[in-house]
Image 1 (tube, helix red, strand yellow):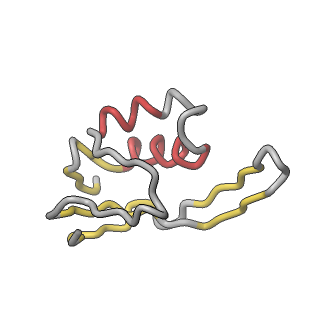
Image 2: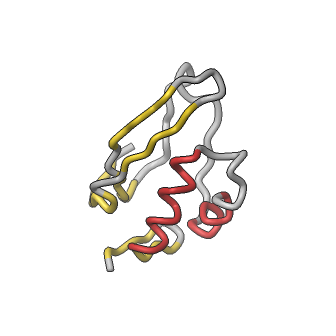
Length: 93
């Protein structure tokens, strides 16, 4: 897959999470939006499953914190507040 027009939309994103086994993650992870011009070809030993979804579907998943990571819930809220994303199209406001 070729990625272009990558834009860092959350340059200062960071999170802290504690797993059920007590493992603590304290990460700084800038978030990028980009355009893809081809189908994904994930490496089978690294990816069990994937699906392209609309931004509306992604936003809806934030209401299901048991289904996605804590940091994804946080990123969705921040992205919703700071960018205009519509079915894969984005622009910084």
